[in-house]
Amino acid sequence: MYLSQDIPKITTHVLQEMKLKGEKIAMLTAYDYSMAKILDESGIDVILVGDSASNVMAGHKTTLPITLNEMIYHASGVMRAVNRSLVVVDMPFGTYQGDSKEALHSAIRIMKETGANAVKLEGGEEIVESINRILSAGIPILGHLGLTPQSINKFGTYVVRATEEKEAEKLRRDAKILEQAGCFGIVLEKIPSQLASEVTQSVRIPTIGIGAGAGCDGQVLVLHDMLGINQSFSPRFLRRYHNLYEEIKGSVGCYIADVKSSDFPNKREQY
Ligand code: KIV
Image (spheres, rainbow, N blue to C red):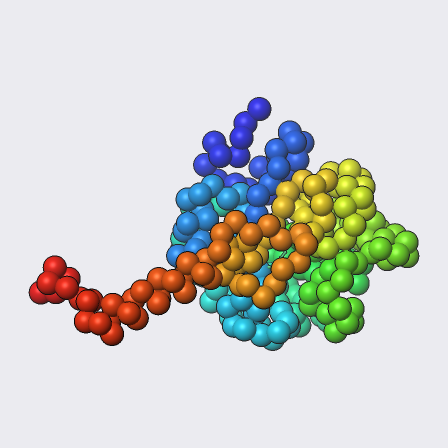
């Protein structure tokens, strides 16, 4: 059995093989060159240039305000850093929901102007026309079901989705629709783990969970959350691997003290 660490470049076909062989897929978000370089060189399988950039990079309350041009800016920086990971770019709110021709135009701009490998769209049946048109241009799509943050104004809250049978049944149906359309994978966000496992077993394409339990084929987290840069977001599903907020604050505090006391720069640090 191969491990994805031995693969020179991750493609959508590699992800499919990983599902078949039971190797879990590791995905994280990145929005800039420097972080993407660290992630790629650490061996991450998939980098998502998420529209969560709207929250963690721009400070908006939701993902809705981020524009196509801003997503292209973030993704271009990421692409300049990456050699091995598969890079997926979120299509921002308003660029694919209404008109499938506009959806294709937006997806083509992302692919042409960034060099990314795939795009991600939120939703199922209601956006299938856009999905079909984008796929017919040879652009790979990662689906996204469950808590789809671009629909926060419809949901009204970020609580776990599909706990009621009616919504769970729609999610099962949507997963099948995305698979049949030709999506290469599906992100499942904040749904009961039992439902996520069931969906994972019912489709041939990989599922990538965030708050959807251990039964998914892979996992994704927002980089700033898992590194502890962002302290204000603490959902149950988040595992923090670092407390970078405190580390950075400590370093900045030391720098300020050194400048104020004229300790920095010393003789060896000047010309
Ligand atoms: O934008 C994002 O970061 C996402 C992940 C939460 C899956 O869509």
